[in-house]
Image (tube, rainbow, N blue to C red; front, top):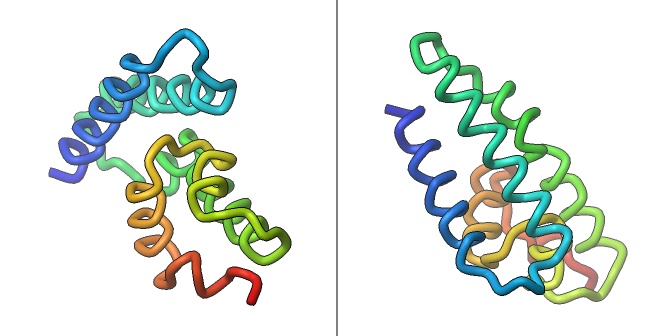
Amino acid sequence: MLCQQLLMHILCELRKGGEKKPTETRSNQKTVSKMILVKNYLVDHYHEKINMKDIEEISGLSKRIEKAKELAMQTDLSFGEIAEKVGYSDIHTSSRIFKRKTGSSLSQFALP
């Protein structure tokens, strides 16, 4: 079930990436590439127990979370700008994932 949810999320993100104009940013291209790697991993390992740490490693999710924290604490970038810098095209997706992984919202790390 978890694999299906991850795959659906990846496919939705890939579709969003495919609708971008040719002026797509480098970070969006990297995101699409990472999602393709995750999708391929899931396809190749669907019959095994999927380890979330492996998915996070392949996708760079844990690195993104740490980078988002760092940007929130050390810069005055908006949450949307932070989301874009760490590879998310949608601030809402970024916020949900951040909260799920850290238990806190990004605003709790932001400069006063």
